[in-house]
Length: 137
Image 1 (cartoon, rainbow, N blue to C red):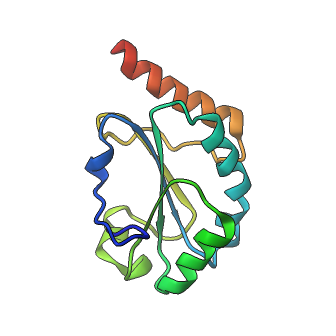
Image 2: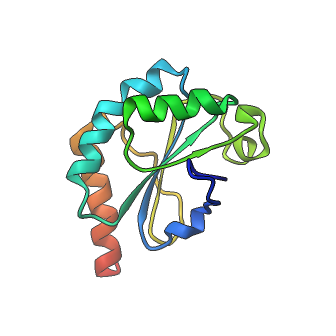
């Protein structure tokens, strides 16, 4: 998929880091409710090897770009041009948004992450994954 600048981004680009993968849309109220918490988490986890990767299912490019700018969302932003009906959405079994995943440093999907609004649980899960990788356990 392409990011806001038109660069092609692959999930494999983030191997070696914990990836918080967030499927969302500009029209999704539940998605947007989490943005203040996401900003705080990004700040708190800034020194960790974690990437916040947002994939919009917006079919409208302008709506996606405007919402990213309006909410000043930190992280990497991608958009599935064909939205929820796309092949990518089917591969991730996206029936609706928001939908969250946590991926470890080896590219393996781990248990579903807590909502960003559950800040302490979210931080604990990321820290556990980062420390697990550092110690090799």
